[in-house]
Length: 109
Length: 109
Image (tube, rainbow over all chains, first blue to last red; front, side):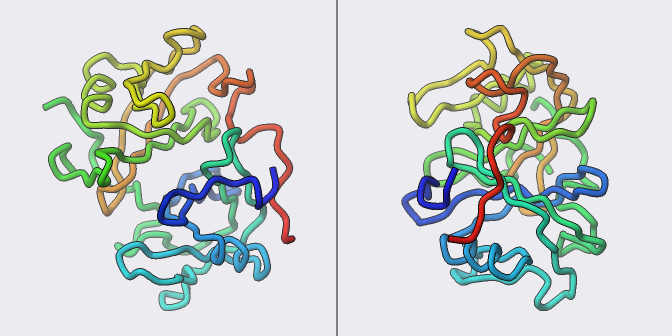
């Protein structure tokens, strides 16, 4: 799969699952634009496109919790990415290591 | 996080990352509608909404490779899901265990 074969959505974004290579923990899900993907590959640290702020986002630029990229894989359809990273610090703005930490599982209503 | 607090997108969908509990492998990324999420919770097997076919999709109904749900977690923003499953068979329509298997990492152009 090449970058040109990826399927970005109508907003020009593709979902990216960030997973730690040290323990395979899923840290977060965010969105990449073509520009943020190319920056991620060029600079070796995760860059996303923030839908809420409508701008490019270098993960950790403010918090210091950058994520060093080991590899970026596409899925079979080319419409989602798996970003394998080395990340010692918190991925979540709450201070948790993973954005999926600290919440009770969903239950039937 | 409760189901009512989740943020479905303008198409009524939320991305769901499916991860194996046995080895923490990320198997696939798909989308759930509220209906498919409720069915997943009620029946204990993954159900998604197929964007390409525009319909509800019981994973494995055709292939036999169903995924038994251990838990479904929301992220901090309530706009993505992590679905922990027991799944012995292939998650991918190509026959691979994961949709992210068998592809070379993306490279800079």
